[in-house]
View 1 (cartoon, rainbow, N blue to C red):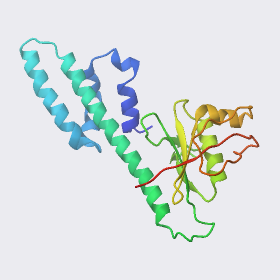
View 2: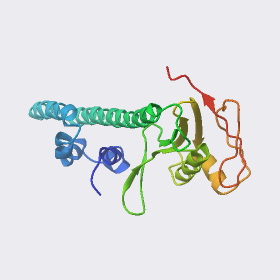
View 3: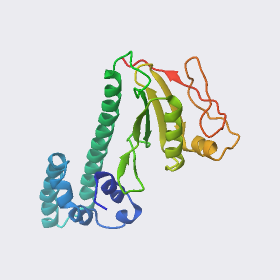
View 4: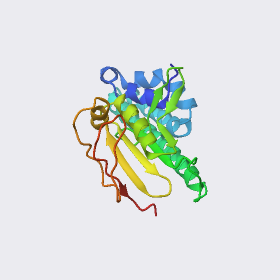
Length: 219
């Protein structure tokens, strides 16, 4: 599998990585970091570290602390970049939906479902055919978005969250992994969701749950 910024970030924060030299880890992925999409931000950090580390070694000083500080700086740059890309994807989908005529027919897909992690980054999944799919998708009907979101959250990491937004009505729904599991397994558990404006409805899979939506101003 090709190395991505997300997979590099996971490797950089793993327990095994913490046991070894931070400089050795950075050297292992030096080419990836200095030639990829973040090269402009990361290359100066590594170049500065090389100079400071060489000086410290010539003075017989320890270099691990400064190297780990540089690694942390790179990790923060990667997180900021991933978050920005994720936000841009969500904004692009929303703007595309809002750009459709207000008097659109029912064929217009104005319901937008997305799955994010604790850092609000849109997640991905590998489809049966091997393609990687961003977990953000548009639907014609709210119940279709709910069903898709429920399935994706059921398969997801327990910390991930799902949202359904309407492009023009400013309606917003949140669901977590536990709620999705309850729906899929048909457990008698009410979903604890945000207040929906003026209505409640039944989620898919014949499981009746209280789904609450709230309207937000989009400025």
